[in-house]
Image 1 (cartoon, rainbow over the protein chains, first blue to last red):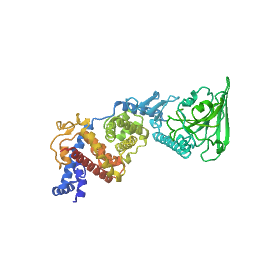
Image 2: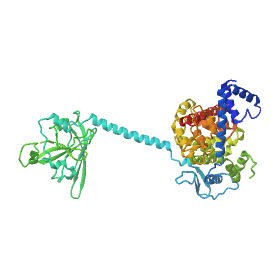
Image 3: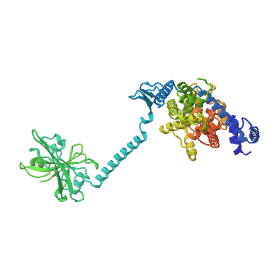
Length: 333
Length: 227
């Protein structure tokens, strides 16, 4: 007998089961004779005997384990409900079994496993909890789909911003392109450093969002409350169709109108923005808004942006970041 | 209800409408089903669920039970095995069934995770130990012997709790065979019927399970310096 033949039989020998129980005397003798001459198999047999003893002790320790009474109550309720549902009349079946919702155990929050419902005919029927269980696989798949959609959307936004940068809105770029343009003093444009919607005279705001970019162009006319949407240079010079939503508010009426405007890239070309001092530059992924405002010319001159002392106003574009802080300005006319 | 009635006779009487027969059947088998599920899953709550599922399945499908295809015990163990696997799969604790991957799984379960709780867990400090006085502070006392074997470890009456924990680390295929044959003391034919495999396959799985268990005991003892 080889070791390979001996070891499986040694397990049976250690467990005391057939073929060594009855009629296995020959095999038993063979195993024992091999074990007597093979140290490795002798150790194997000794280990298996010890293991059998330990497993028997474990089985004896578990012998008193039983399901709690609540499980029996649930099972018997399910049994009675099932019997009441049987088409043929059966003995000992209670046809007036009330509504029973069996639960797995007495633990709080335990999921019901079986239900017995009363139906109008006074009979009962049982429905396994399987029908009531949430479909965890479907839930997991839905969660995965939602997460994938969010990730794809985020990647799309980032890539579009990267592909369509705002050429005239980055103050650092503008400074590099116009080194002769001195930045304005911080006190020159105080109204631009506040939140746009907090400024006096700003009554309405119109927003234009162009597909592929996050920039919005807004013109604010502080006196009349009217406004016009303006575009912004298209990065690649192509015509851009925009939807402009303008809102006019009167004393008692409110009107919303939308216009689709097609503009050429040249229409939006103009002087570069000048970065305002003492403000943080825009982050590459930050949402940007351009607000067109009418500023008093002396105020503009005080900021060093334009000469002049006349009382008329100057149209200017203010670049506003996500936090509502003005970051850069350019004089339109 | 006479206790001498066989399972099949009780089942027939139950499906003829005798509630007492079904109750007797439940009381006869709820314990083994509960123990089997607990030994497979390691949790009381899971075992309760499995027991209930087994008997709900008996209520729904017991009418079609065919005694010629095997004893009722094998059918009940088969259902319990299926439900335990479902539970393990749902809990993410289902060890690979593919025998080709068993060796890889063994590497995983032989780590500290396997023995950490078993050797130092609370179970070792309580009444789970046999041969009191062997455990001090969660570590088995005695002289460290690198050449110790499983028998030496078990001669020191290692805790039953540790045996249960190590059984739970076995791959499910082997765990089933070990639990049915050694903890429930089913015969090879009955266990093979419950598992739906030939007797030879069952014996092979049992052989592998016991070898793995011995290896885990030996490795765990060596890592902890137990002799």
